[in-house]
Length: 138
Image (cartoon, rainbow, N blue to C red; front, side, top):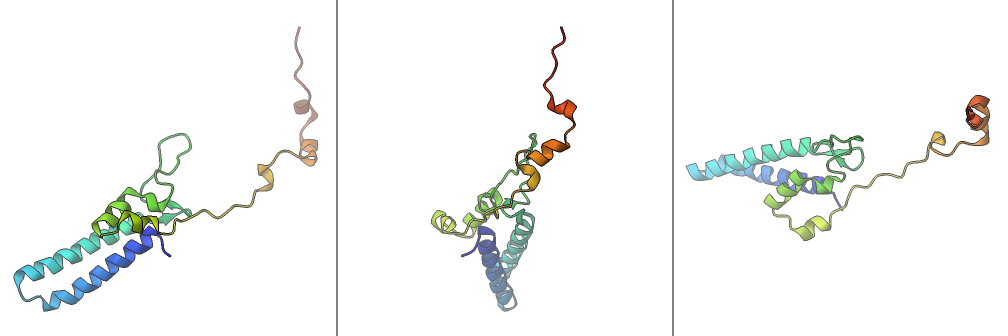
């Protein structure tokens, strides 16, 4: 099973290979123009695929980030990238084909010791002035 990006890359490569094979044998001007147009379209698709690729295990590197506080990715899963979905439509993938593809998943992360609650050893390192309750001035 493959991701949407891998499926599109394979289709573009196959179309490009076929167009490269047809170009030298294209006798008429129209056939030659169609082969050249196919090659150009494949080059454009390859550029889009290079820009919209997998980053950070699941996100799309080409969609950018929200301008919000945390800078969350615009497309959290590469299979949801609007550019790649438009390309999938142009290359003849149906919604069922896309639904059957593998979705990139984040690997579970081991918690870092500092992510948990403070333990007794951590509390002992905190100066006593920070542990006492605030005084009420009267």
